[in-house]
Amino acid sequence: MNAKNSQSFVDDFMNYVKSKDPRQPEFHQAVHEVVESLADYLLDNPRYLHARILERLVEPERIIQFRVPWIDDRGKIQINRGFRVEMNSAIGPYKGGLRFHPTVNQSILKFLAFEQVLKNSLTSLPMGGGKGGSDFDPKNKSDNEVMRFCQSFMTELSRHIGAYTDVPAGDIGVGGREIGFLFGQYKRIRNEFTGVLTGKGVEWGGSLIRPEATGYGAVYFAKEMMSTRGESFAGKIVCISGSGNVAQYACEKVIELGGKVVTLSDSSGAIYDPDGIDTEKLAYVMELKNIHRGRIREYADKYGVQYMKGQRPWSIKCDVALPCATENEINKEEAEILTRNGCFVVAEGANMPSTEEAVRHFINTKILFGPGKAANAGGVAVSGLEMTQNSMRLAWSRKEVDDKLHSIMCNIHEMCVKYGKTTHDFTNYVKGANIGGFVKVANSMIAQGLV
Image 1 (cartoon, helix red, strand yellow):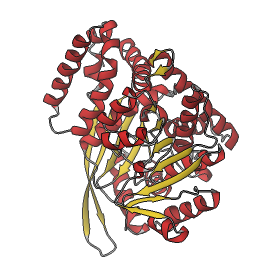
Image 2 (image 1 turned 45 degrees about the horizontal axis):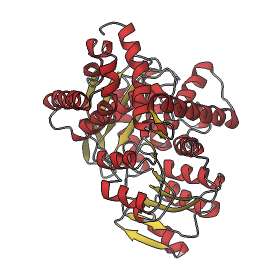
Image 3 (image 1 turned 120 degrees about the vertical axis):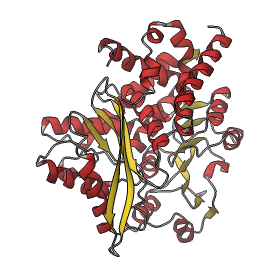
Image 4 (image 1 turned 90 degrees about the horizontal axis):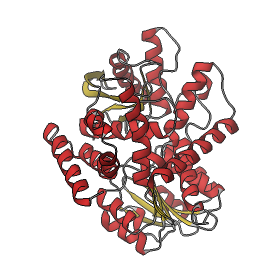
């Protein structure tokens, strides 16, 4: 396909998207990355263009925005905004997390929902794509304040979700505590015990391996990529960003596979432990972050290692990078530093953690780069398995779920290779993931008519 025709197609489509939603940069970034890798495929398969599948994919089926009033511990009334973007239900009920963070807005949620559609498609499970949340910040809030907010939020959201309609999960700022409060209020309002939320406690309908799933899945995906070059995690130096759920369990799985994790981070800075984070040190991190809600600098104080205030870990020499914090945390300069320092594998544990320029650099240098919609699909995959267990009224063992997760990540890798292999020794995983996720959704949309 002529490169000029392809670029013109991308430019024209992005002008169309920006003209409709001019102030949504995160959404534009996500759409551009997908359309750029789909362009040649779409021009070679014009039936998708005739059906205007792309135009329909970037338009949410519905967006719900609502007021969330609640009372803090001082008796003062607080007001937040709540959102749910129900993006696409062609292959199943809307599925995607809830994010509670001050930066939440419609652009971020649309980008996340758009990515979720393709990510969920890659898992091969029957799940559509959605995303939601609020500009509420659970940090420095008491349990009672978080409960009151969650109950108010769910009072409105409950009108729009259901086990066969829309099944939210957790995301940044929404962990086990928040899911519990949200589920309790849903059950109270609807008078039914159903699998309407995933990430639930194991005692009340949750799945084993769900907390570990995103981190484990990212490592499983990286392992598959490395195997294409005869490499493994054994003896590799690994930089991980973040210190929350995804980072913790990515670290755990890397240790299990023989790698050495030397960094973790949070919003204040990063730590560098050249001796490696072993299981004992990881247990300390989990207690620090999950129970005491402390800062990662406390790790540096306890173990006498370097703390890089206000910095991210990408200046540290490594073989493998696992960005597990938030979007756009690796820019072009940091991407260049990583590859210059010998990093040959990047697997995204977070959603869109690499800027467009960084992604382009990774692809141009032909390193093994696993985009988030493929590499971090383990979380939503096990959410889908939780939905299955809820529907069947049974619970699988830890090994059963982990084996299924591993199998799903291997299948996603195969799908990426199928659509993304460009030469005998290079796979463009971005292209492979986008085309692989798109085809299933697009074919389903065409089959179901203009709805």
